[in-house]
Every structure is written in structure tokens, then in C-alpha cells.
Length: 282
Image 1 (cartoon, rainbow, N blue to C red):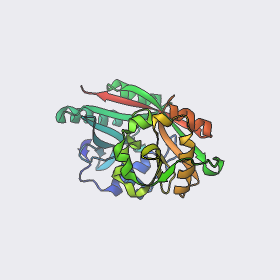
Image 2 (spheres, one colour; image 1 turned 60 degrees about the vertical axis):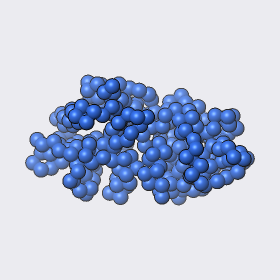
Image 3 (cartoon, rainbow, N blue to C red; image 1 turned 90 degrees about the vertical axis):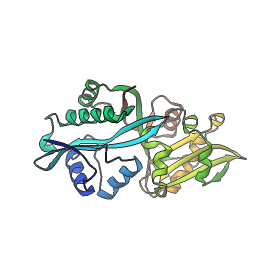
Image 4 (cartoon, one colour; image 1 turned 120 degrees about the horizontal axis):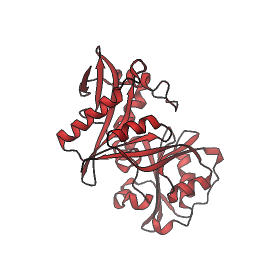
């Protein structure tokens, strides 16, 4: 058994292992190689911190790891960890986590964060055994576009993402965005998203970001002074016209946040929930 980073591993080999590992996952995953490549770019893949476990020169398990400097903390993120079917339930996941913890000590990293499905108790126990703690619950939603009402837009519409440089996203969201939903993710691959900004004169009342093809709404940000004016509904009504997908999805909204309650009232269905878990080295 050999543990190595993925710096010299081709995407095709990683993709083959990914498809095998998640072929019987609780959530059906459609992941052609181009979609995997996009996900890795958006979530800030760091091949040097990403690792795999090889057995007989085959990737038995892998951990695809992102890296960012967040609030001054050197942070790694588990984009995806998996073990191919042949080697599942043989401790490969634990070996990969311990390898990553060693890298954190070696490189003086501050945080390791990830998400795990709410009902994946075995994975939660594995992470807790390795020092992770649950930090919050995240909820995932979807709706068909034709189920949404047509809202009356009451503010000036702009599509200028430079306006977002003037805001603190946590103020507009009401919570810290999950890794994959942050403005950093958007900035990694802007060409795949459309932006809508609602302006009240020179002030941003709210903004939204949606993927052009798959309908993922990356963020719905509302100016705290405008939280009682159905800005969310106006934005969703505009964003649905900016994507070719028939379904809109909003993933990893903090549970019990203002936004989670607002979109439930709009008719979004809560599909599944996750826990964000964090290992802090401070």
C-alpha cells in the first residue's frame, strides 16, 4: 500500500476512481470528466495536498483536497473522498485522513473542513475519531422552475459583478458561506455563472449567482436593510431565466437561517441535509 499526492496523476485516472467509488452512493452522482474538472477548479483543488492510496498501482482510495486562505487561516477542504468498491470497508478512508493530518502538522495548516451527509453515521464517527467536530447543519433544496411565481421586480437590475467587490458576503447571507458556495468559488470560474444585482440607487439591495447550465444558485445575498421586501423572490425569478436548466438548486444553506425559511416559503423542497465538520489545529 502506497500513499502519494496527486501532483503527477492524470485527471482521467482520478475520474475512473471517482466513478467507481461513488457508483453506489446514497445520492446518484452524474459526473462526466468535464464536470469533475469544473468542480475541482471551482472548489480550489490543490493537487499537492490531495492524496491517494495505491494498491498494485491502482488507486484504491483518494482524497481530493482544496486549499484557501480564509480569514487568515490556512484551510484545506475535502472536495471528495472515496474508496473504490473492491477496497471499501478496509480502512482506506482512515489511512487517507491520517495522512492529511500529518500534512497539516508538517505545513502548519490551521483548519480542515468538510461536509458529510446527515445520515452517514459511519463517516461521522470516522471523522470524530480523527478529531473533527460538527460545526453546523447545512440544508440542500431544489424546485422546478415552472413551480415558481413570477415576482414583481421593484429595483433596478444590473449584471455587473464588480459591484460584489464592495460587500461582505457573510453580511448579505447572514452566515459564512459553505466552501463550494463562496464568492471565491465563483471567481475561480466566472464564465460558468450569471450574476443579477438589484440596486436601490447606489446601494445593493440584493444579488444572486446561478450556474448557466445546471441551475445551481451559488448565492442569494440580501442587504440586511431589505430583508422584509421579498428580495429573494425577485432574485430567484430573475435567475431562473439565466440558466438553461429546468430545475433550480440551492445547496448548503445554513439550517434555521433567514434564507432557509424564505426559500421554503417560496416552495423549494428540502432534499437532503449535511453536517459541516471542522478539525482545528489551533
